[in-house]
Amino acid sequence: MATLFIGGTWRTGSSSEQREVVNPFDQSVVAKVDEATVEDVAAAVGAARAAFDAGEWSGTPAAERGALLRRVADLLVRDREDIARLETLDTGKTVRESRQDVDDVASVFRYYADLADEDPGRLVDAGRPDVVSRVVYEPVGVCALITPWNYPLLQVSWKVAPALAAGTTIVVKPSEVTPLTTVRLTELLEEAGVPAGVVNLVLGGGEVGAAMVEHPDVDMVSFTGGLGTGRSVLRAAAETVKKVTVELGGKNPNIVFADVDLETAVDNALTAVFLHSGQVCSAGTRLIVQDEIHDEFVAAVAGRAERIRLGNGFDPAAESGPLVSEQHRARVEEYVATGVREGARLVTGGRRPGEPELAGGFFYLPTVFADCRRDMRIVQEESFGPVLTVERFTTEEEAIALGNDTHYGLAGAVWTADTPRAERVARALRHGTVWINDFGPYLPQAEWGGYGRSGNGRELGPSGLAEYREAKHIWHNTAPAPARWFTG
Ligand code: NAD
View 1 (cartoon, protein in one colour):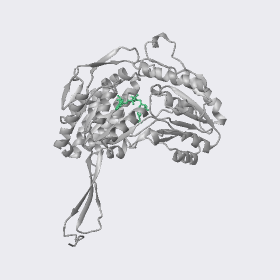
View 2: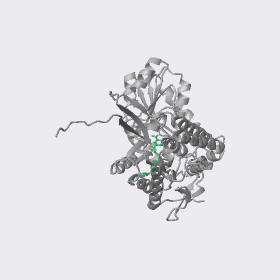
View 3: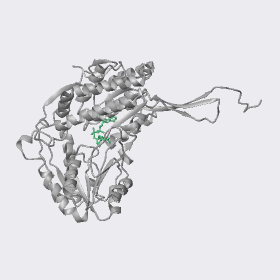
């Protein structure tokens, strides 16, 4: 089956090249997908441009665009098992997580379906009775949506739903490592009745993404991925002064005060970092623990990390799957070697598991480093793997300083029984999301995004929709008369 979708037609790439999609659990080939060329990107952008300029989609009443998004949500629910299966084959994550992703994504489509026609703009007091001044919101134009491999369906939906609600037309490119659920979502968008040219799908690696970002007919880029790639995207987009939002990495502090319920905080510290083998932009990779409980806490986290059951995402007994690729595991291994060289104390993990039944997959053991210092590379740089670093603190001020000692600023958490302190620390942390006595939840209604080098712009919430809109001021003079500025 052809897997590029351009101008309402499924096509193969113009070079006829294909890419194998590999199951990270056993390296079997689960699918072959078409690879796009730069010419295919141009065709996809051309189709999106023509559809946008024709005005059919942006001119469709917002409530009808919302109704289409609601149909997509229903189709996601209908095909939940099939989509979850694809996501697990592609990423290696447990099918339980994949099902949760599908449910979350359906809620995101419903949220933007409701929001689509909620805000028609506003009247502004011009201070003159003969003038009607109003601000209206218009779709930004043609948008290039580029996503990573860790939450393929989720990340693409956070972009597609608000982009369509706003009335833009889109060219989508998922990560070359995990394209399957984005292909599936595109099929559902087609089934839901999206007009030809409004949604276009190209597949391929960085050069395909770069061609999208560079294309002069693209008005906006929404990118989620690594910091280095984000920088390239920002640089390339500068040439044509595109609107850009980038959601990049994170090095997220999880601060634990001594007054917590130890079992609860340990349990959550574990999920914070080891869920999906740490391949989560908001993973709580930096555990920051108060002196009094430090040793006990580290021992408990390490003990439980050793009991995490790795396995095939389809095995109900598996609690975590493999890393996404051989290349990524090599990156994590290099990172761990750096930690050892820097003098951090390896408490557990730091190697591949020995079980023969895991030997075919890209597995890596949950790893804990203690005695970490804030200036270590492993404390400052993202591993994007199952690696936890532990630092200690004495005072609240120190905890805040450590929590903010990062160029990133995506997410963080504070654990304490002292409510005023929890609020103080939450306010002081310079991160886009802060959890108090929890780690990880997000809501479609609440903005998601980063301070600092975690990116700019926001996804989800009303701001997630605003990214895809231009605000236009219309000044209507109902009684025009000569201005008489120039008198000659
Ligand atoms: P990546 O940066 O390697 O790739 C992301 C996407 O960009 C892929 O589709 C890739 O093909 C494409 N790409 C590569 N080079 C490009 C270029 N020059 N121009 C345009 N596109 C290009 O990231 P990844 O390894 O797929 O994902 C992991 C990263 O994503 C981590 O750093 C993680 O923190 C980040 N992430 C952030 C969030 C967030 O919400 N902030 C969410 C998920 C993942």
